[in-house]
Structures are given as structure tokens and as C-alpha cells.
Length: 337
Image (cartoon, rainbow, N blue to C red; front, side, top):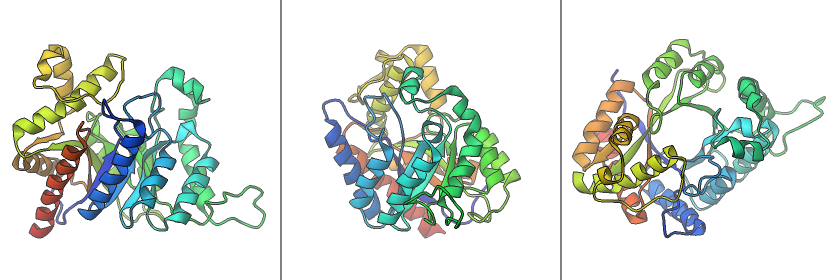
């Protein structure tokens, strides 16, 4: 499918904590990157909820969103996402209602169904396995908290009620695609770490979409990994940080974002390398020409309305440069349209 208009480009920041960097510095890096993305014309800047992961500093996602939104002026800021089964919908409405009151018209609330962590941490979060089963009801409840309160309403979301906070459903499978279609909400697919069901999910979402007060037609965001550098060789080297972090997670030893290595094959087994190739098959890694070709292929395949780039790069300056190069491609697409 080919879109006639250029897609929006956005940023997913996992607030990486590179080896040798403090958490405080990592959070300051997130704000610096958000300001950089805003200056380059990116549309939105999302942060994600992950727990018990030393290499990710955005566990208190709403707090980090507040930090980034307060330090920027125009870019939309939000969650990609809040793991709703970890929270009472009322508390999510209050947190994001507060953010929307502070930054009107700039806050997004992307919702995920996964725990964002391991089972021991789930128990520490007071989460129970059955919470996943009530995800659809929790989304509907959350929508209700954002509506204007009625006179007979005993419990109100203050802040929250009457606030304009767009809800998104995020997914790596077809479940959230079906729910987003049924509720008429925008849908974001996490192809940066779980690509297998991407096209099935997008197809289901578009075919079954029902217009709503929130959205009159389907809106698809696709998130992929991006690592752009001046040369293919340098980009492949920088991307070994992402590869190492993913391997460590698969081995059950999550840690800080490691510095790049010259040859990932020296520290990964053939089976692990095959897994990396499979998981990151939609990632755009390379020089501007290489990244352009891969992103054009992804856009041609998906017809996405928006492309979100996740870039886990150890060196902060190199990460900013990657987004600068990607912004050049965005400008080219806009000019061509």
C-alpha cells in the first residue's frame, strides 16, 4: 500500500542508561534529545514504562513525561506506553489529566496490555495475572474518567475530567489491534522488538475499524529501530549496543546499555545472531541512503500514517546525530509530496 501524503515522524525514547552514565544524566539526555527532536520537526516524543531494568530510566513514566514536556514547547509528549494492568484507571486519569492541565494540547496517552517487566516485579507492583483479562474494560473505564463529570457522579477524576487526552492502543499482536478498531482509537504497532504479527494486526485494525468521537478513520503508527550514521559501517557498529542489550535480556541478565563492539559475532552465538536478524528485520541501520531505502520499504509495506523511531545508541551525541539524519529523510518525503 502506498500513501499519497508523507507520514509523520516521531521518537520513542526508552530513556537508556548507558554504561558509565548516571540515571540523572540519562534523564537529562532524554530532555536534550526531546529539544533536539522538537527543533527538527518531529511530531511526538513518547516514553515507555519498564520496570526492574537497569538500562531504562523511565519506570515512573508520567514523571519523565512531565520533565520532558516542561522543557519543550511544541512537540507532543506522551507514553508509549503506560502498562494499564499495572495501574488503577482512575490514577492514570489523574496523572495524565494533570499533565494535560499543565501542557494543554500536547499530551498523548498510549496504553499497553503487557506487564513491562518480569513476574517477581509484577508481584512487587501488586499486579495480578487476571488484570490482563480486564484490559478492555479498563480502557473503557479510563475513557469515562476523562469525560465531563455528571452531577450525580460520586467519584471524579480531578484533574482528568473534561481533559483532552488522546488515547492510543499499543500492541505487538492482533489483540490490541482488534480492540483499537472496536473503540475507534489510533493504533501503534511495536515492530521495533516484536515484528511477527505486524501486517496481520494492521490489516485487522483497518478492516474492522469503527469511527468514534476520537477518530473518524484508521490511524496507524509503526515503530521500528533506527540507527543512522554517516557510513553503513559506523551505523552497524553503533547498533551493536542495541544488539548486546537485547541478547542480555534474552539471557535473563538485563543491564545498562553497553558500548558498541567491532564484531557482535564475537560475543553472540549463531542462534542468537539469527534471533537478532529475525527480531530486527524492519530496523533501518546504516548510512542515510541505506536508512532511506529501508524506511521507504516499511512505509510501502504498511502504508503507515506515522513512523516512530527507537534508537538505543550508547553515545548521546551519536544518538542525536542519528535523529538529525532521519529528519533529513522526513524533509525529503515532505518535499516530494
